[in-house]
Image 1 (tube, rainbow, N blue to C red):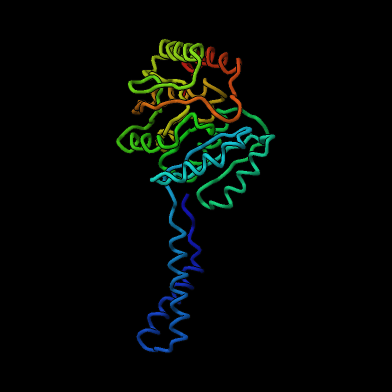
Image 2: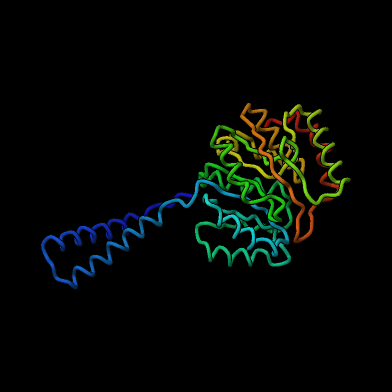
Length: 288
């Protein structure tokens, strides 16, 4: 996140600023004065460019999300608080990566991408993003879907929960005030009882253990042994919350309204449910 100053350029422009001051005091030649003034402006602009844009990064895995990436970028960057974006694309056949490259060119320093060779799973995409964000020393690191089932405006509320003391803030559908829109009753029933099952097995103390809209502090992610987490779907989301709980870090649930996607196709599969069903028992013995 933090850029390294080019000391040669800084020193050179700093010298020119001193010459500008000298010109004002001792040489009122209009041409020299104008030239020195321009150099002063360039120096100030250079220094301003070195400032980090944000202490927050939103990690968004993508696979065939061409219809959503531009809309999501616009929504996040339009927020009152500054949030950078890291897309992790799994070689989307629909050209998502090429579109992201164009977005990066339009927003240098604010939007980033990690291109992976193929579809390697949601969990590994987030782990890759977490390690990148930690290396850049972001203070607040978010998970968010690209399909607008998570409202970008809620990023501000999740961050505030962490600023106020939580190490993990969860955008929750099942805590007081949370709700779901546009889901068939059968899917809601499956999700609700899946969360109940997780609470009974892990005693995790979280209403929405499968939620994928979250804010971690840098401290929380550094505390977790990310290298041993290989789950890909819901099991990954459960495992990350369980890991934070095992490290006795504070977890807060923030009520959100979850909406089913409008564009693109769901990545849900039977395998994802099976992984979670069995995975919660494996988590009990993992050294997270």
